Amino acid sequence: MGSIGLSAYGMTVSELVELASCADELGFDALWLGEHVFRPTGYGSEHPTTGTVQHHTTIVDTDTELTDPWIAHAAIAAVTSRIKLGTAVYVTALRHPLLTARATISVQEFSGGRVLFGVGSGWLEEEFTALGVPFRSRFSRTEECIDILRKSWSGAEFGHTGKHFTFDPLQVHPRPAPIPVVLGGNTPPALARAARLGDAWFASGTPTPDEAVELVTELRRLRGELGRSGDFPCYVRVATTDPDVLARYRANGIDDLVLWADTLWVGDTPDERRRNLMAAADRLGVGTLDNATAG
Image: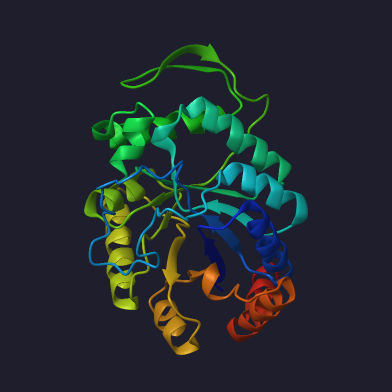
């Protein structure tokens, strides 16, 4: 049986905590948080998912609420018990991976192992420039970050000599804290990277059922060529709660669906927002899905 999660972006930490608390009670699978560090004034970069429907027509605008996902998820973990804590996606190339390791391990242990580390290579060149990170190196930096993060999460001592990072032997944590790496992106290089390095995949934008099937089919083909088998969740955002449309995804083996939170978490008061999310959960059979999975 599949899962239904929520994707949130442009909300304050307080709003996210309120949403997560309700979603946790209702049985939604995960809350995925998008992120940018800041809005570069007058930026000219374009999001790479040309042709795919974008829920946010302007991703970083003057009034877009930007939050640190690990601070938000730490607050969410404190008021929830079961909902998974995802990032969709975290631009890990913008930071030193040892700092990211420290944050992710802290949230992973505090939450009881609920982190899903969704990572992308980034597209907003002005963001990289302001932080002093070469934009052209973002793909190789992302791969090197993933390698260092997995070693950091292992609990073992390790040193590293690489293209972008070099340091003497160290230990980030005294015990293993494994975290699934969910690679994002729809372009051919992104799909190849996800098939080769990921524990799961998260679609960019909101692909139609036909687009999603094409992307997931290609991922499965690539994984087969690499000799990779086993569980590989493919998280896909959908634009509707229509059961017939959702059934089209599931008929093609796309079982892990994600809805935009701001289409369900609507209303002028907390009670109204909760009622609307409860109604959506009932339409979607979210509690039933959760119980079936638990059984």
